[in-house]
Structures are given as structure tokens and as C-alpha cells.
Image (cartoon, rainbow, N blue to C red):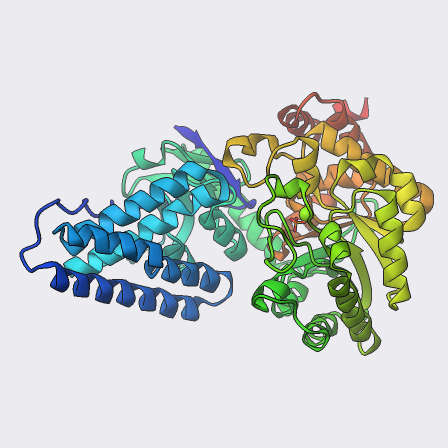
Length: 557
Ligand SMILES: C=C(OP(=O)(O)O)C(=O)O
Ligand SMILES: [Mg+2]
């Protein structure tokens, strides 16, 4: 049987299923026999113990996992939750029951919000289970411990479990819940774990049965035939060879160079990206620097130190730093108004920086100073630019403050449509396909209910990319892609056919994209682009290009 979901990455795995144990039963609603104060003491101690344990696991895991686990630890000690637990204890309930009810009420509120917050509901369930297990003195539910490697099947994986998965044991992850922005998906992507999330029938898989998990196809095949297993094993061997192959510069089959760059959010990840063959950095997101600074912008000195560390990791290489993109999915208290009804259409990105121009000037100054003492080739660009006038404003300010190569992100359809005029002002453009898709299809990128619209294969998005590519070629200026679209190996070829001159992506995607580009010439890439543009929707475009790739003769006719 073939089940489908959202695949994360391109890899494939074969192995026996191991199911996550089912959650603990809801504690019975019986009256406490030890009294309110004693129950309160038990609850407080347990919540504290679980919070500390989550923090310890976070410290051990580091990176994104640490942030996720620390957020969970904070949930355990959330004052609103502890108030409702106290209230329930006051009614004579046991600590187990009060914790269960209070967390369940809060999780329902989150789930009802949908989108990013809805996907945090699973995190809350996990914290509740850990506290109840602690109160009952039983082990916390978690990943099974087996001697042989297995495919882990679960409703949804708690961040605490994903973060600490033993990658030698877990061949793949299959979950019945969770969307592309769930923590499971984010962490699986970061750790390069083969994963398919949102497989509705996943829980019908039984312990011990063999499955083929294909992330590229977003499928899970149960009871696979011998041929299917052999084909999957051959792909596993091919991928292993690919990942181990020396990281040559990105190029098409006819030798056209397409530099492959990394998307980074912290200079700490720079060395690992260089090791995975990144030829530079195509998008350095600076929001994290500002989020970590706590309540105000970091000083010029603090910023300079961070930028120097980044630039030093790429001597002689291109590094594109994006100015602070606060607002919408990345709000910052000191720059954004929390009360906007449509923050994605509000004062975000360059619009917010322009209102607080001192912050913009300080960031540009810190970058110019870091550039002076390092040998990387620093480019800077502004996020959420929607007019030619904003382009002129940003380019002239950045140049006045000493930056040499200054460009804009193309994330809003208006400037893709006026790309000629934008390219006359800017030194380069970098297309952010995540936002460009959100704005072209009018679909909030954080909202699960409209996730199906958020597909960069949509010909409307591709047509805008083509406008920018053509304008770049006419002006003789580079056009990069730095949204998730560049990490899709087949779409990457289409984007090059539309005029992209560089591609930037999370480092774990580099090997697959490099291999895919090397299979096609520029002429073929252009033909695939035409095929995609001629389709009427995202699914049709993907299917038409996949068919063209599989029967090359037709594309030549
Ligand atoms: C690269 C992009 O920026 P971010 O995902 O940080 O908004 C994008 O919008 O495609
Ligand atoms: Mg963006």
C-alpha cells in the first residue's frame, strides 16, 4: 500500500517500523485524598523537574533543538497555566488530573488558532505527558530503544524526541500529524533525517513490518515488493555516493557555472556550510542576531564582531547579508507594532527600518566596518522592497555608508513586474520565493489551511521570476534565488532556465541540487522553464516538467 504526505528533503530509507508508544491515559477525575496543599506541592515540583530536564536536554543538543526545548521548558512553567492548575487543585482534583485539564484547555486554544501556533499544540501535549509521567513515577513516553535500526512511526514527534534522535538507529521518520512548518519538519530538515510528515494513515503501520520511505516522492510504501526494495536500496547507495563525492562548484551539464550558496542564520553555522561545499553565502538572515539581543538592537560593536566572524569563514568568497527583516513571521518588539491586523502587509522589512532609520544606519555601518577588516566579498540587500523608490533609497543610503555591492530582495510582485527599473538602480536582485509565493497567491505562509497555495512551482510565481531573470540579463546584473524553491532539485533547474544566476539554500540541500544541475544543459533548463510556464497550476507545472525530464525526446521536439 502507498501512503502519501509531505516529504522533507530528497532521501529514501528502507527498514522495519517501530511505533512510538501511545500516550498515557487521561488521569481519572477522582477527588484528592491528600489535600489541596500537598497536591499543589506535587504539581509545582513536577513542573519544575520537567522544565529542568527539558533545559538539560536542550543544552546537550544545542542549536535549534536547544531553542525548541527551552521554549517547552517555559511552557511547563507558564504562569497562566499554573494559575489554571491552582484553580483546578482548589476544586479538589489530583495534581495529575489538574495538569491534564489545564494543558488540554490551553492546547485547544492554540490548535484553534491554526498555522504556526496550531502546530505548537503538539509541543504542549508533550510537556503535559512528561509532567503526568513524572507525577505517576513512570518513564516519560518517548522513542523506543531497539538494537536494530528502524523507521520511527508516530502521531507527531515531540521536539524533545526529535532533537535527541539517535541518527544511527532511526532510518526515517513518518508522522500522521504535522505540516511542513511543524517542529518535526524543521528539525528533520536541519538534521537531514529522511522524513514524511502528515501521512494520514501512518498509524495503521504495524511494529516490525518493512516500509520504504521516500521523502522526494512524499510517500511511504508498506509491504513493498522485492523490486521496490531493491530500487530503494540502489537509490540509497547513489545518494551516499553523491553526498560523499567531492563538492565541485555548481554547474550545468554544458559547464555553465551556477554558484551554489548557503542560507545561514548564524555565523556559527558558517564553517559547516563551507564544509558541505557552499561556495559562499547567498542569504545571511540577521534577525536572529537581533532576536537574541533581547528587547533592543545590538550595538554597532556587537554587530561588527558577529559580521567579522561570518566574513572570516569565507575569505575571497561572496557573502550576501540581508538587512534586518522584522515583522510578520519575525516580529521584533522594538520595531514592529504588535497590533497590525495583517502584519505580512504591514510595516515590515525595509518599511520598518526606514521608520527607525537609526537602526538601519547602524546595521549598515557595522557591516561596512566588518567589510574593511576582512577579505570576503560582502554584498548587502534589503528585504520586503515593494517600490523602485525604496530601491533607490536603500541603494544610495548603503553606498553613502560605505557598502560596495548593494541589491534588493524580490519578494513582492510589484518590483518583479518593474524589474527593469529596479535593476537600473540595484547592483543585483535576490528572489525570496517564500514571500514572493505568499504575496503572489495571497496565501499567508504561516497558515496551515492555505498551505496548498504556498507552492513556488505555480506558473504565476515562475513568470515573475522570469521577469526578474530577463531584466537581470538585459542589465548584465546577477539574479539569485534564496527562498526554499532553490532547494528543490528539479525546480532549481527551472529557476536557472528562468534566468537565475546563483542559487542559495540550506546547506543540507546542496548535494542534491548540485547533482540535479549537472544533468541538464542551459538549453534544456530553458525548455523546462517554458514547460512550467505553460502549465495552469503548480501541480501541473511540476508534473509537466517531471514528464519532460523522464522523456527528454519530447522536450526537444
Ligand atoms: C528567503 C526569504 O526570506 P524569509 O524566508 O527569511 O522571509 C523568502 O521570503 O523567500
Ligand atoms: Mg522573505
